[in-house]
Length: 639
Image 1 (spheres, rainbow, N blue to C red):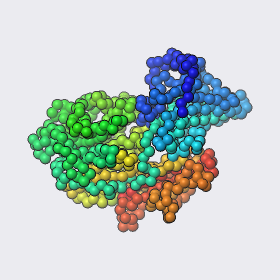
Image 2: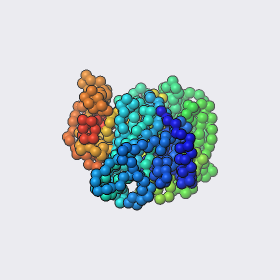
Image 3: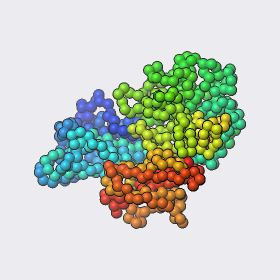
Image 4: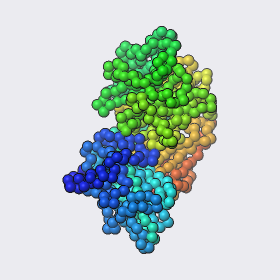
Protein backbone atom coordinates (compact mmCIF):
# COMPACT_ATOMS: atom_id res chain seq x y z
CA UNK A 1 0.00 0.00 0.00
CA UNK A 2 1.24 3.57 -0.60
CA UNK A 3 3.33 5.15 2.17
CA UNK A 4 3.20 8.85 3.04
CA UNK A 5 6.26 11.00 2.42
CA UNK A 6 6.96 13.70 5.02
CA UNK A 7 5.95 17.13 3.67
CA UNK A 8 9.43 18.58 4.07
CA UNK A 9 10.96 15.82 1.95
CA UNK A 10 8.31 16.29 -0.73
CA UNK A 11 9.05 20.01 -0.92
CA UNK A 12 12.81 19.42 -1.10
CA UNK A 13 12.49 16.78 -3.82
CA UNK A 14 10.04 18.85 -5.83
CA UNK A 15 12.22 21.95 -5.68
CA UNK A 16 15.31 20.07 -6.77
CA UNK A 17 13.52 18.42 -9.69
CA UNK A 18 11.88 21.63 -10.82
CA UNK A 19 15.22 23.38 -10.83
CA UNK A 20 16.90 20.74 -12.98
CA UNK A 21 14.23 19.33 -15.32
CA UNK A 22 11.31 21.77 -15.48
CA UNK A 23 11.49 22.13 -19.24
CA UNK A 24 12.61 18.58 -20.10
CA UNK A 25 10.28 16.07 -21.66
CA UNK A 26 9.93 12.64 -20.12
CA UNK A 27 12.50 10.40 -21.86
CA UNK A 28 11.29 7.17 -23.46
CA UNK A 29 12.84 3.73 -23.06
CA UNK A 30 14.26 2.10 -26.15
CA UNK A 31 11.59 -0.17 -27.66
CA UNK A 32 9.47 0.52 -24.61
CA UNK A 33 5.87 -0.44 -23.87
CA UNK A 34 3.21 1.27 -26.00
CA UNK A 35 1.52 2.58 -22.84
CA UNK A 36 4.64 4.43 -21.63
CA UNK A 37 3.65 7.92 -20.46
CA UNK A 38 -0.10 7.24 -20.60
CA UNK A 39 -1.94 9.18 -17.90
CA UNK A 40 -4.70 7.05 -16.39
CA UNK A 41 -5.56 5.30 -13.14
CA UNK A 42 -3.81 2.05 -14.11
CA UNK A 43 -0.43 3.09 -15.53
CA UNK A 44 2.87 4.11 -13.89
CA UNK A 45 5.79 5.53 -15.95
CA UNK A 46 8.79 6.71 -13.92
CA UNK A 47 12.29 7.67 -15.12
CA UNK A 48 15.44 8.26 -13.10
CA UNK A 49 18.42 9.89 -14.83
CA UNK A 50 20.46 10.29 -11.58
CA UNK A 51 21.65 13.66 -12.87
CA UNK A 52 21.41 15.75 -9.69
CA UNK A 53 24.16 15.22 -7.13
CA UNK A 54 22.14 16.77 -4.30
CA UNK A 55 19.13 14.50 -4.92
CA UNK A 56 20.35 11.62 -7.10
CA UNK A 57 17.24 9.50 -6.43
CA UNK A 58 14.75 12.18 -7.46
CA UNK A 59 12.57 11.00 -10.34
CA UNK A 60 12.12 12.99 -13.53
CA UNK A 61 9.63 15.78 -12.93
CA UNK A 62 7.49 14.70 -15.89
CA UNK A 63 7.17 11.09 -14.80
CA UNK A 64 3.53 10.01 -15.07
CA UNK A 65 1.81 8.35 -12.12
CA UNK A 66 -1.86 7.99 -11.10
CA UNK A 67 -3.42 10.13 -8.38
CA UNK A 68 -3.12 7.30 -5.84
CA UNK A 69 0.68 6.99 -6.26
CA UNK A 70 2.76 8.48 -3.44
CA UNK A 71 6.55 8.58 -3.75
CA UNK A 72 8.33 7.40 -0.64
CA UNK A 73 11.45 8.97 0.85
CA UNK A 74 14.22 8.87 -1.77
CA UNK A 75 11.55 7.81 -4.26
CA UNK A 76 11.48 4.34 -2.70
CA UNK A 77 15.23 3.60 -2.98
CA UNK A 78 16.95 1.94 0.00
CA UNK A 79 20.53 0.74 0.30
CA UNK A 80 22.41 -2.09 1.92
CA UNK A 81 25.43 -1.90 4.22
CA UNK A 82 27.65 -0.55 1.43
CA UNK A 83 26.01 2.63 0.14
CA UNK A 84 26.18 3.62 -3.50
CA UNK A 85 27.75 6.91 -4.54
CA UNK A 86 26.98 9.54 -7.16
CA UNK A 87 29.39 10.04 -10.07
CA UNK A 88 29.37 12.97 -12.47
CA UNK A 89 30.66 10.83 -15.35
CA UNK A 90 31.38 7.13 -15.85
CA UNK A 91 32.66 6.07 -19.27
CA UNK A 92 30.67 8.74 -21.09
CA UNK A 93 27.47 8.53 -19.01
CA UNK A 94 26.72 11.63 -16.97
CA UNK A 95 24.96 11.25 -13.65
CA UNK A 96 25.52 7.68 -12.43
CA UNK A 97 24.95 5.91 -9.11
CA UNK A 98 27.22 3.01 -8.18
CA UNK A 99 30.27 1.84 -6.27
CA UNK A 100 33.92 2.63 -7.06
CA UNK A 101 36.58 -0.06 -7.24
CA UNK A 102 39.30 -0.21 -4.59
CA UNK A 103 41.25 -3.18 -5.91
CA UNK A 104 39.47 -5.55 -3.56
CA UNK A 105 36.07 -7.22 -4.06
CA UNK A 106 33.20 -4.91 -3.16
CA UNK A 107 29.44 -5.38 -3.29
CA UNK A 108 26.42 -3.22 -2.70
CA UNK A 109 22.66 -3.64 -2.94
CA UNK A 110 20.24 -0.95 -4.11
CA UNK A 111 16.55 -1.70 -3.58
CA UNK A 112 13.56 0.05 -5.14
CA UNK A 113 9.91 -0.30 -4.24
CA UNK A 114 7.18 0.63 -6.76
CA UNK A 115 3.73 1.14 -5.31
CA UNK A 116 0.47 -0.26 -6.71
CA UNK A 117 -3.20 0.41 -6.17
CA UNK A 118 -3.90 -3.24 -5.29
CA UNK A 119 -6.43 -5.04 -7.46
CA UNK A 120 -5.89 -8.62 -6.44
CA UNK A 121 -7.84 -10.15 -9.31
CA UNK A 122 -6.04 -8.18 -12.02
CA UNK A 123 -2.71 -8.72 -13.76
CA UNK A 124 0.21 -6.34 -13.50
CA UNK A 125 2.24 -5.94 -16.69
CA UNK A 126 5.64 -4.78 -15.46
CA UNK A 127 8.56 -3.31 -17.42
CA UNK A 128 12.07 -2.39 -16.29
CA UNK A 129 14.94 -0.99 -18.38
CA UNK A 130 18.30 0.39 -17.22
CA UNK A 131 21.87 0.94 -18.38
CA UNK A 132 24.72 -0.50 -16.34
CA UNK A 133 28.46 -0.93 -16.52
CA UNK A 134 29.53 -4.47 -17.31
CA UNK A 135 33.29 -4.61 -17.50
CA UNK A 136 35.61 -7.50 -16.82
CA UNK A 137 35.62 -6.70 -13.11
CA UNK A 138 32.13 -5.24 -12.53
CA UNK A 139 28.52 -6.31 -12.84
CA UNK A 140 25.01 -5.16 -12.01
CA UNK A 141 22.27 -7.77 -11.68
CA UNK A 142 18.63 -6.73 -11.34
CA UNK A 143 15.84 -8.96 -10.14
CA UNK A 144 12.22 -8.76 -9.10
CA UNK A 145 12.18 -9.80 -5.47
CA UNK A 146 10.00 -12.83 -5.11
CA UNK A 147 7.27 -12.67 -2.51
CA UNK A 148 4.92 -15.56 -3.08
CA UNK A 149 2.65 -14.34 -0.31
CA UNK A 150 1.87 -11.49 -2.71
CA UNK A 151 2.01 -12.90 -6.22
CA UNK A 152 3.46 -15.32 -8.70
CA UNK A 153 5.15 -14.38 -11.93
CA UNK A 154 3.08 -15.45 -14.92
CA UNK A 155 5.94 -14.88 -17.32
CA UNK A 156 9.24 -13.06 -17.34
CA UNK A 157 11.78 -12.23 -20.03
CA UNK A 158 15.12 -10.48 -19.83
CA UNK A 159 17.23 -9.13 -22.67
CA UNK A 160 20.55 -7.29 -22.73
CA UNK A 161 22.14 -5.20 -25.48
CA UNK A 162 25.76 -4.02 -25.49
CA UNK A 163 26.25 -0.26 -25.72
CA UNK A 164 29.48 1.70 -26.15
CA UNK A 165 32.30 2.10 -23.60
CA UNK A 166 31.44 -1.00 -21.59
CA UNK A 167 27.79 -0.16 -20.91
CA UNK A 168 24.93 -2.63 -21.29
CA UNK A 169 21.17 -1.97 -21.57
CA UNK A 170 18.99 -4.55 -19.80
CA UNK A 171 15.23 -4.88 -20.25
CA UNK A 172 12.96 -7.04 -18.08
CA UNK A 173 9.29 -7.74 -18.83
CA UNK A 174 7.02 -9.57 -16.40
CA UNK A 175 3.38 -10.35 -15.78
CA UNK A 176 2.32 -10.73 -12.15
CA UNK A 177 -0.81 -12.37 -10.74
CA UNK A 178 -2.56 -11.48 -8.58
CA UNK A 179 -1.45 -7.88 -8.75
CA UNK A 180 0.77 -7.28 -5.70
CA UNK A 181 0.60 -4.24 -3.40
CA UNK A 182 4.03 -3.27 -4.70
CA UNK A 183 6.94 -4.47 -6.82
CA UNK A 184 10.33 -4.74 -5.13
CA UNK A 185 13.40 -4.54 -7.36
CA UNK A 186 16.90 -5.41 -6.23
CA UNK A 187 20.10 -4.23 -7.95
CA UNK A 188 23.18 -6.19 -6.89
CA UNK A 189 26.40 -4.29 -7.76
CA UNK A 190 29.82 -5.93 -7.59
CA UNK A 191 33.33 -4.66 -8.38
CA UNK A 192 36.54 -6.64 -7.95
CA UNK A 193 39.17 -4.26 -9.36
CA UNK A 194 39.42 -0.50 -9.88
CA UNK A 195 36.51 0.21 -12.21
CA UNK A 196 33.04 1.51 -11.27
CA UNK A 197 29.88 -0.59 -11.14
CA UNK A 198 27.12 1.86 -11.96
CA UNK A 199 23.49 2.35 -13.03
CA UNK A 200 22.01 5.01 -15.29
CA UNK A 201 18.79 5.73 -17.21
CA UNK A 202 16.35 3.68 -15.15
CA UNK A 203 12.83 3.28 -16.57
CA UNK A 204 10.09 1.60 -14.55
CA UNK A 205 6.65 1.04 -16.02
CA UNK A 206 3.63 -0.93 -14.88
CA UNK A 207 0.09 -1.27 -16.14
CA UNK A 208 -2.87 -2.94 -14.48
CA UNK A 209 -5.02 -4.97 -16.88
CA UNK A 210 -8.03 -7.21 -16.51
CA UNK A 211 -7.25 -10.94 -16.64
CA UNK A 212 -7.77 -12.60 -20.00
CA UNK A 213 -8.77 -16.09 -21.06
CA UNK A 214 -5.44 -17.03 -22.62
CA UNK A 215 -4.23 -19.52 -20.01
CA UNK A 216 -5.55 -22.47 -22.01
CA UNK A 217 -7.44 -20.89 -24.93
CA UNK A 218 -7.85 -22.23 -28.46
CA UNK A 219 -5.14 -22.20 -31.11
CA UNK A 220 -4.37 -19.09 -33.12
CA UNK A 221 -6.25 -19.20 -36.43
CA UNK A 222 -8.90 -21.66 -35.27
CA UNK A 223 -12.37 -20.86 -36.61
CA UNK A 224 -14.84 -19.90 -33.87
CA UNK A 225 -17.30 -22.77 -34.26
CA UNK A 226 -19.73 -21.09 -31.85
CA UNK A 227 -20.17 -18.31 -34.39
CA UNK A 228 -21.53 -19.58 -37.70
CA UNK A 229 -20.07 -17.88 -40.77
CA UNK A 230 -22.41 -15.27 -42.26
CA UNK A 231 -22.97 -15.04 -46.00
CA UNK A 232 -23.30 -11.26 -46.17
CA UNK A 233 -25.03 -11.15 -49.55
CA UNK A 234 -27.61 -13.67 -48.34
CA UNK A 235 -28.01 -11.58 -45.19
CA UNK A 236 -28.97 -8.59 -47.32
CA UNK A 237 -25.69 -6.65 -47.46
CA UNK A 238 -24.78 -5.94 -51.08
CA UNK A 239 -21.16 -5.09 -51.88
CA UNK A 240 -19.81 -5.39 -48.34
CA UNK A 241 -16.48 -3.71 -47.64
CA UNK A 242 -15.51 -4.04 -43.97
CA UNK A 243 -16.61 -5.41 -40.60
CA UNK A 244 -16.03 -4.70 -36.90
CA UNK A 245 -17.62 -5.98 -33.69
CA UNK A 246 -19.00 -4.45 -30.50
CA UNK A 247 -20.31 -6.41 -27.55
CA UNK A 248 -22.46 -5.44 -24.59
CA UNK A 249 -22.01 -6.52 -20.98
CA UNK A 250 -24.33 -9.50 -21.55
CA UNK A 251 -22.03 -10.81 -24.29
CA UNK A 252 -24.38 -9.95 -27.17
CA UNK A 253 -22.37 -9.03 -30.26
CA UNK A 254 -23.22 -6.56 -32.99
CA UNK A 255 -21.51 -6.90 -36.36
CA UNK A 256 -21.01 -3.55 -38.07
CA UNK A 257 -20.69 -4.06 -41.83
CA UNK A 258 -20.09 -1.28 -44.34
CA UNK A 259 -21.40 -1.37 -47.90
CA UNK A 260 -20.19 0.63 -50.90
CA UNK A 261 -23.62 0.42 -52.55
CA UNK A 262 -24.78 -1.92 -55.25
CA UNK A 263 -24.56 0.65 -58.08
CA UNK A 264 -24.10 4.34 -58.79
CA UNK A 265 -26.48 6.63 -56.90
CA UNK A 266 -27.38 3.91 -54.39
CA UNK A 267 -26.85 4.45 -50.69
CA UNK A 268 -23.61 3.56 -48.95
CA UNK A 269 -24.68 2.15 -45.60
CA UNK A 270 -23.36 0.88 -42.32
CA UNK A 271 -25.40 -2.16 -41.30
CA UNK A 272 -25.84 -3.64 -37.85
CA UNK A 273 -26.22 -7.43 -37.75
CA UNK A 274 -26.84 -9.81 -34.90
CA UNK A 275 -24.56 -12.81 -34.41
CA UNK A 276 -26.98 -14.92 -36.50
CA UNK A 277 -26.88 -12.49 -39.42
CA UNK A 278 -30.17 -10.67 -38.86
CA UNK A 279 -30.50 -6.89 -39.22
CA UNK A 280 -30.53 -4.97 -35.94
CA UNK A 281 -32.04 -1.56 -36.56
CA UNK A 282 -32.22 0.48 -39.74
CA UNK A 283 -29.12 0.96 -41.92
CA UNK A 284 -26.99 4.00 -41.09
CA UNK A 285 -26.63 6.08 -44.24
CA UNK A 286 -23.01 7.09 -44.84
CA UNK A 287 -23.45 8.65 -48.29
CA UNK A 288 -24.16 7.77 -51.90
CA UNK A 289 -22.18 5.76 -54.41
CA UNK A 290 -20.73 8.27 -56.84
CA UNK A 291 -17.84 8.24 -59.27
CA UNK A 292 -15.82 10.27 -56.73
CA UNK A 293 -16.61 8.06 -53.67
CA UNK A 294 -17.33 4.61 -55.11
CA UNK A 295 -15.94 2.62 -52.17
CA UNK A 296 -17.49 4.22 -49.11
CA UNK A 297 -16.05 3.03 -45.78
CA UNK A 298 -13.35 0.47 -46.53
CA UNK A 299 -12.27 -0.45 -43.00
CA UNK A 300 -13.78 -0.35 -39.51
CA UNK A 301 -12.39 -0.38 -35.98
CA UNK A 302 -13.99 0.00 -32.55
CA UNK A 303 -13.26 1.92 -29.34
CA UNK A 304 -14.63 1.40 -25.84
CA UNK A 305 -14.38 4.24 -23.32
CA UNK A 306 -13.81 3.59 -19.58
CA UNK A 307 -17.51 4.33 -18.96
CA UNK A 308 -18.50 1.59 -21.43
CA UNK A 309 -19.53 3.90 -24.27
CA UNK A 310 -18.51 2.44 -27.63
CA UNK A 311 -17.68 4.00 -30.97
CA UNK A 312 -17.18 2.56 -34.43
CA UNK A 313 -14.60 4.35 -36.55
CA UNK A 314 -14.44 3.97 -40.33
CA UNK A 315 -12.15 5.33 -43.03
CA UNK A 316 -13.27 6.67 -46.41
CA UNK A 317 -11.27 7.91 -49.39
CA UNK A 318 -13.02 11.10 -50.54
CA UNK A 319 -10.05 12.63 -52.33
CA UNK A 320 -11.83 12.70 -55.70
CA UNK A 321 -14.76 14.55 -54.08
CA UNK A 322 -13.10 17.00 -51.67
CA UNK A 323 -9.40 16.11 -51.52
CA UNK A 324 -9.69 14.38 -48.13
CA UNK A 325 -9.19 11.00 -46.58
CA UNK A 326 -11.72 10.94 -43.76
CA UNK A 327 -12.30 9.15 -40.46
CA UNK A 328 -15.99 8.86 -39.58
CA UNK A 329 -16.84 8.14 -35.94
CA UNK A 330 -20.23 6.56 -35.20
CA UNK A 331 -21.81 6.45 -31.76
CA UNK A 332 -22.55 2.74 -31.26
CA UNK A 333 -25.49 3.49 -28.95
CA UNK A 334 -27.36 6.02 -31.07
CA UNK A 335 -26.11 4.91 -34.50
CA UNK A 336 -25.37 8.52 -35.46
CA UNK A 337 -22.23 9.94 -37.05
CA UNK A 338 -20.47 11.74 -34.21
CA UNK A 339 -17.70 13.39 -36.24
CA UNK A 340 -15.87 13.42 -39.56
CA UNK A 341 -12.15 14.23 -39.46
CA UNK A 342 -9.92 14.85 -42.47
CA UNK A 343 -6.38 13.45 -42.33
CA UNK A 344 -3.35 15.64 -42.95
CA UNK A 345 -1.91 13.26 -45.54
CA UNK A 346 -0.60 15.56 -48.28
CA UNK A 347 3.06 14.79 -47.49
CA UNK A 348 2.59 11.02 -47.85
CA UNK A 349 3.13 8.94 -50.97
CA UNK A 350 -0.24 7.17 -51.09
CA UNK A 351 -1.94 5.10 -53.78
CA UNK A 352 -4.09 7.05 -56.21
CA UNK A 353 -7.79 7.48 -55.37
CA UNK A 354 -10.07 5.74 -54.88
CA UNK A 355 -8.17 3.43 -52.52
CA UNK A 356 -9.19 0.92 -49.86
CA UNK A 357 -7.42 2.25 -46.76
CA UNK A 358 -7.44 0.28 -43.51
CA UNK A 359 -7.88 1.65 -39.99
CA UNK A 360 -6.88 0.44 -36.51
CA UNK A 361 -7.76 2.28 -33.31
CA UNK A 362 -4.71 2.43 -31.03
CA UNK A 363 -5.70 3.28 -27.40
CA UNK A 364 -2.20 4.10 -26.04
CA UNK A 365 -1.35 6.32 -29.02
CA UNK A 366 -0.65 10.02 -28.57
CA UNK A 367 0.22 9.42 -24.89
CA UNK A 368 -3.05 7.75 -24.10
CA UNK A 369 -5.35 10.14 -25.98
CA UNK A 370 -5.83 7.44 -28.63
CA UNK A 371 -4.67 7.45 -32.24
CA UNK A 372 -5.32 5.66 -35.53
CA UNK A 373 -3.00 3.52 -37.64
CA UNK A 374 -3.98 3.89 -41.30
CA UNK A 375 -2.79 1.18 -43.70
CA UNK A 376 -2.32 2.27 -47.30
CA UNK A 377 -3.29 -1.05 -48.95
CA UNK A 378 -0.44 -0.47 -51.38
CA UNK A 379 -0.68 -2.99 -54.22
CA UNK A 380 1.78 -1.69 -56.81
CA UNK A 381 4.46 -4.25 -57.68
CA UNK A 382 7.90 -3.16 -56.49
CA UNK A 383 6.60 -1.04 -53.62
CA UNK A 384 6.19 -1.82 -49.94
CA UNK A 385 3.12 -1.31 -47.82
CA UNK A 386 2.94 1.22 -44.98
CA UNK A 387 0.88 2.23 -41.98
CA UNK A 388 0.76 5.81 -40.74
CA UNK A 389 -0.31 7.03 -37.31
CA UNK A 390 -2.68 10.00 -36.94
CA UNK A 391 -4.15 11.66 -33.87
CA UNK A 392 -7.86 12.22 -33.36
CA UNK A 393 -7.66 15.59 -35.10
CA UNK A 394 -6.10 14.09 -38.22
CA UNK A 395 -2.53 15.28 -37.60
CA UNK A 396 0.28 12.94 -38.62
CA UNK A 397 2.13 11.43 -35.64
CA UNK A 398 4.23 8.76 -37.32
CA UNK A 399 6.58 8.53 -39.17
CA UNK A 400 8.89 11.03 -37.51
CA UNK A 401 11.85 12.21 -39.55
CA UNK A 402 14.90 10.05 -38.88
CA UNK A 403 13.04 7.60 -36.63
CA UNK A 404 13.31 3.84 -37.02
CA UNK A 405 10.18 3.40 -34.89
CA UNK A 406 7.78 3.42 -37.81
CA UNK A 407 5.63 1.21 -40.03
CA UNK A 408 6.42 3.17 -43.17
CA UNK A 409 7.46 0.73 -45.92
CA UNK A 410 7.41 -2.11 -43.36
CA UNK A 411 4.24 -4.00 -44.31
CA UNK A 412 3.35 -6.45 -47.08
CA UNK A 413 1.26 -5.26 -50.00
CA UNK A 414 -2.55 -5.29 -49.87
CA UNK A 415 -3.01 -5.03 -46.10
CA UNK A 416 -6.78 -4.84 -45.70
CA UNK A 417 -7.23 -4.21 -41.98
CA UNK A 418 -6.03 -5.11 -38.52
CA UNK A 419 -6.36 -4.47 -34.83
CA UNK A 420 -4.52 -3.81 -31.59
CA UNK A 421 -4.56 -6.06 -28.54
CA UNK A 422 -3.71 -4.08 -25.37
CA UNK A 423 -3.33 -7.27 -23.35
CA UNK A 424 -0.46 -8.54 -25.50
CA UNK A 425 0.85 -5.17 -26.68
CA UNK A 426 0.66 -6.33 -30.29
CA UNK A 427 -0.73 -5.08 -33.58
CA UNK A 428 -2.29 -7.57 -36.00
CA UNK A 429 -2.80 -7.14 -39.74
CA UNK A 430 -4.05 -9.24 -42.65
CA UNK A 431 -2.83 -9.07 -46.22
CA UNK A 432 -4.51 -10.19 -49.46
CA UNK A 433 -1.19 -10.19 -51.33
CA UNK A 434 -0.71 -13.68 -52.87
CA UNK A 435 1.76 -15.74 -50.86
CA UNK A 436 3.21 -18.96 -52.22
CA UNK A 437 2.82 -21.77 -49.66
CA UNK A 438 2.85 -25.59 -49.71
CA UNK A 439 -0.96 -25.47 -49.91
CA UNK A 440 -1.02 -23.08 -52.86
CA UNK A 441 -1.28 -19.30 -53.23
CA UNK A 442 -2.91 -17.90 -50.08
CA UNK A 443 -4.58 -14.47 -49.84
CA UNK A 444 -5.67 -14.40 -46.19
CA UNK A 445 -2.26 -13.90 -44.58
CA UNK A 446 -2.29 -12.61 -40.99
CA UNK A 447 0.73 -11.50 -39.00
CA UNK A 448 1.65 -9.96 -35.63
CA UNK A 449 3.77 -6.86 -34.98
CA UNK A 450 5.07 -5.88 -31.54
CA UNK A 451 3.83 -2.45 -30.48
CA UNK A 452 7.00 -2.16 -28.38
CA UNK A 453 9.38 -1.90 -31.34
CA UNK A 454 7.04 -2.04 -34.38
CA UNK A 455 8.83 -5.14 -35.66
CA UNK A 456 7.26 -8.44 -36.79
CA UNK A 457 7.28 -11.04 -34.02
CA UNK A 458 7.31 -13.99 -36.43
CA UNK A 459 3.80 -15.06 -35.41
CA UNK A 460 1.63 -15.63 -38.49
CA UNK A 461 -1.82 -17.07 -39.13
CA UNK A 462 -4.29 -17.52 -41.98
CA UNK A 463 -8.01 -17.39 -42.61
CA UNK A 464 -10.09 -20.50 -43.17
CA UNK A 465 -7.98 -22.25 -45.83
CA UNK A 466 -10.49 -25.10 -46.06
CA UNK A 467 -12.94 -22.71 -47.74
CA UNK A 468 -12.76 -23.41 -51.53
CA UNK A 469 -12.03 -20.67 -54.04
CA UNK A 470 -10.87 -20.73 -57.65
CA UNK A 471 -8.02 -18.33 -56.84
CA UNK A 472 -6.54 -20.43 -54.04
CA UNK A 473 -7.40 -21.92 -50.65
CA UNK A 474 -9.48 -19.69 -48.39
CA UNK A 475 -10.37 -16.98 -50.91
CA UNK A 476 -9.20 -13.35 -50.66
CA UNK A 477 -9.15 -11.22 -47.51
CA UNK A 478 -11.17 -8.01 -47.69
CA UNK A 479 -11.37 -6.95 -44.04
CA UNK A 480 -10.06 -7.86 -40.57
CA UNK A 481 -10.69 -6.32 -37.16
CA UNK A 482 -9.14 -7.70 -33.94
CA UNK A 483 -10.93 -7.29 -30.61
CA UNK A 484 -11.39 -8.85 -27.17
CA UNK A 485 -14.76 -10.23 -26.18
CA UNK A 486 -16.27 -9.16 -22.86
CA UNK A 487 -15.07 -12.45 -21.32
CA UNK A 488 -11.47 -11.76 -22.45
CA UNK A 489 -11.36 -14.03 -25.52
CA UNK A 490 -9.19 -12.80 -28.44
CA UNK A 491 -11.02 -12.69 -31.77
CA UNK A 492 -10.39 -11.51 -35.33
CA UNK A 493 -13.51 -10.76 -37.38
CA UNK A 494 -12.75 -11.32 -41.08
CA UNK A 495 -14.50 -10.80 -44.40
CA UNK A 496 -13.20 -12.94 -47.25
CA UNK A 497 -14.34 -13.27 -50.85
CA UNK A 498 -14.58 -16.96 -51.73
CA UNK A 499 -16.17 -18.20 -54.96
CA UNK A 500 -17.78 -14.80 -55.41
CA UNK A 501 -19.44 -14.70 -51.98
CA UNK A 502 -18.59 -12.32 -49.10
CA UNK A 503 -18.25 -14.44 -45.95
CA UNK A 504 -17.87 -13.08 -42.42
CA UNK A 505 -16.31 -15.33 -39.77
CA UNK A 506 -14.19 -15.09 -36.64
CA UNK A 507 -10.77 -16.51 -35.81
CA UNK A 508 -9.49 -17.44 -32.34
CA UNK A 509 -6.15 -16.69 -30.73
CA UNK A 510 -3.67 -15.41 -29.64
CA UNK A 511 -0.50 -17.47 -30.10
CA UNK A 512 1.16 -17.08 -26.67
CA UNK A 513 -0.63 -18.41 -23.61
CA UNK A 514 -0.07 -19.86 -20.17
CA UNK A 515 1.25 -18.64 -16.83
CA UNK A 516 4.90 -19.65 -16.49
CA UNK A 517 8.14 -18.33 -15.12
CA UNK A 518 10.75 -18.06 -17.83
CA UNK A 519 10.90 -16.97 -21.43
CA UNK A 520 8.77 -16.03 -24.40
CA UNK A 521 7.61 -18.67 -26.86
CA UNK A 522 7.47 -17.58 -30.49
CA UNK A 523 7.43 -18.89 -34.03
CA UNK A 524 9.03 -18.35 -37.41
CA UNK A 525 8.07 -19.63 -40.84
CA UNK A 526 4.79 -21.17 -41.98
CA UNK A 527 2.75 -23.41 -39.63
CA UNK A 528 1.49 -25.40 -42.58
CA UNK A 529 1.49 -29.00 -43.79
CA UNK A 530 4.48 -29.54 -46.04
CA UNK A 531 6.38 -26.55 -44.66
CA UNK A 532 10.10 -27.05 -44.17
CA UNK A 533 10.76 -23.66 -42.55
CA UNK A 534 8.52 -23.75 -39.48
CA UNK A 535 10.35 -23.08 -36.22
CA UNK A 536 9.45 -22.58 -32.57
CA UNK A 537 11.57 -20.01 -30.73
CA UNK A 538 12.48 -19.16 -27.15
CA UNK A 539 13.73 -15.72 -26.12
CA UNK A 540 14.32 -13.60 -23.04
CA UNK A 541 16.32 -16.14 -20.99
CA UNK A 542 19.87 -14.65 -20.76
CA UNK A 543 20.97 -16.81 -17.82
CA UNK A 544 19.79 -20.13 -19.25
CA UNK A 545 22.23 -22.73 -20.53
CA UNK A 546 19.79 -24.73 -22.64
CA UNK A 547 16.20 -25.73 -23.27
CA UNK A 548 14.06 -28.58 -24.59
CA UNK A 549 10.89 -28.04 -26.63
CA UNK A 550 7.81 -30.14 -25.94
CA UNK A 551 4.89 -30.30 -28.38
CA UNK A 552 1.42 -31.66 -27.81
CA UNK A 553 -2.04 -31.97 -29.27
CA UNK A 554 -3.91 -30.57 -26.26
CA UNK A 555 -3.75 -27.81 -23.68
CA UNK A 556 -6.72 -29.22 -21.79
CA UNK A 557 -5.47 -32.64 -20.68
CA UNK A 558 -2.29 -34.71 -20.64
CA UNK A 559 -3.57 -38.25 -20.38
CA UNK A 560 -5.86 -38.21 -17.35
CA UNK A 561 -4.21 -35.09 -15.89
CA UNK A 562 -6.09 -31.80 -16.39
CA UNK A 563 -4.04 -28.89 -17.70
CA UNK A 564 -2.57 -26.53 -16.67
CA UNK A 565 -0.70 -28.57 -14.04
CA UNK A 566 1.32 -26.75 -11.38
CA UNK A 567 4.85 -27.95 -10.64
CA UNK A 568 4.98 -26.10 -7.31
CA UNK A 569 4.64 -29.34 -5.28
CA UNK A 570 7.86 -30.52 -6.92
CA UNK A 571 9.82 -27.40 -6.00
CA UNK A 572 9.26 -25.49 -9.25
CA UNK A 573 7.17 -22.89 -7.52
CA UNK A 574 6.36 -20.67 -10.49
CA UNK A 575 6.22 -23.23 -13.28
CA UNK A 576 3.24 -24.91 -14.89
CA UNK A 577 2.82 -27.63 -17.49
CA UNK A 578 0.51 -25.99 -20.04
CA UNK A 579 0.59 -28.51 -22.92
CA UNK A 580 0.34 -32.26 -23.27
CA UNK A 581 3.89 -33.59 -23.45
CA UNK A 582 3.29 -35.78 -26.49
CA UNK A 583 6.54 -35.08 -28.35
CA UNK A 584 9.94 -34.07 -27.06
CA UNK A 585 12.67 -32.25 -28.92
CA UNK A 586 16.39 -32.43 -28.21
CA UNK A 587 18.42 -30.27 -25.89
CA UNK A 588 19.15 -26.92 -27.52
CA UNK A 589 21.88 -24.60 -26.23
CA UNK A 590 20.73 -21.09 -25.32
CA UNK A 591 22.90 -18.45 -26.97
CA UNK A 592 22.48 -14.79 -26.06
CA UNK A 593 19.23 -15.55 -24.29
CA UNK A 594 17.46 -17.38 -27.10
CA UNK A 595 17.23 -20.64 -29.03
CA UNK A 596 15.17 -22.17 -31.81
CA UNK A 597 13.96 -25.60 -32.91
CA UNK A 598 12.97 -26.47 -36.49
CA UNK A 599 9.88 -28.62 -37.02
CA UNK A 600 9.58 -30.02 -40.57
CA UNK A 601 5.87 -30.67 -40.99
CA UNK A 602 4.41 -33.71 -42.82
CA UNK A 603 2.79 -33.02 -46.20
CA UNK A 604 -0.91 -33.00 -47.06
CA UNK A 605 -2.31 -36.50 -46.67
CA UNK A 606 -0.32 -37.37 -43.56
CA UNK A 607 -1.91 -34.74 -41.34
CA UNK A 608 -5.51 -33.53 -41.25
CA UNK A 609 -6.10 -29.83 -42.01
CA UNK A 610 -6.29 -27.32 -39.18
CA UNK A 611 -4.60 -29.52 -36.60
CA UNK A 612 -4.10 -27.63 -33.31
CA UNK A 613 -0.56 -27.96 -31.98
CA UNK A 614 0.78 -26.59 -28.68
CA UNK A 615 4.36 -25.82 -27.64
CA UNK A 616 6.26 -25.24 -24.41
CA UNK A 617 9.93 -25.05 -23.46
CA UNK A 618 11.58 -26.56 -20.41
CA UNK A 619 14.41 -24.16 -19.59
CA UNK A 620 17.62 -25.01 -17.72
CA UNK A 621 18.75 -21.96 -15.77
CA UNK A 622 21.08 -22.07 -12.73
CA UNK A 623 19.61 -18.81 -11.37
CA UNK A 624 16.11 -20.21 -10.70
CA UNK A 625 14.98 -22.65 -7.99
CA UNK A 626 15.97 -26.23 -8.80
CA UNK A 627 17.75 -24.92 -11.91
CA UNK A 628 14.78 -25.63 -14.17
CA UNK A 629 11.59 -23.80 -15.19
CA UNK A 630 8.85 -23.89 -17.79
CA UNK A 631 8.32 -21.17 -20.38
CA UNK A 632 5.23 -19.44 -21.58
CA UNK A 633 3.54 -21.63 -24.19
CA UNK A 634 2.42 -21.19 -27.80
CA UNK A 635 -0.55 -22.49 -29.79
CA UNK A 636 -1.28 -22.50 -33.50
CA UNK A 637 -3.06 -24.41 -36.21
CA UNK A 638 -1.04 -26.53 -38.56
CA UNK A 639 -2.96 -25.56 -41.71
